[in-house]
View (cartoon, rainbow, N blue to C red):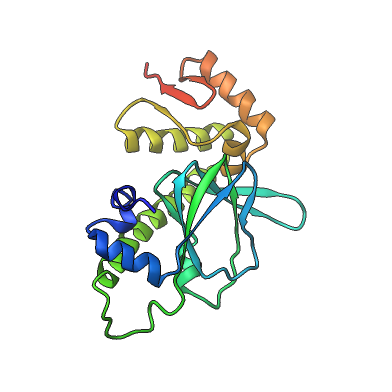
Length: 219
């Protein structure tokens, strides 16, 4: 495992090479490769691991028993997933984690990491601090999704989402992490209805878009 690469990942921020090496050994780190659409973790399981995306990206989604799919989030390179379920060991996952493309994932087994009152590991505090900061940011992003799906009209949902991406990128021009089907699933919309509305918005001079690239236009 290339420690220099891991030091650039937010979960390992502030750790020395020795601390990261000790962490990887203590948490039984394993690197695994997946192909596009491979299921990495599935709903109902209790995996007890935190996944770190070393390359590629993954999608967090929910498929109900009637075949309806909802996309909850998209995790890019250097991001993490399943951390809440890893720490709450007896809680089964309510979501699936799927490879969005070919990707490499580093799995860390976290069983018992919160049980020790006094730790002899110099990396414990740094690891948990980084994990808390990342989880807090992810919770903000997940709560933000409710703002995008609560409006009644398709246009209002699209504009809510694009406005948020514009603010996060500090630009009126940006790429989104979804293709059309994924964006429709994320906003709880039918793909055909979404595509039709995007076409209308382009004709009306509200946006310019090509594939995953968007530009917001102002009068």
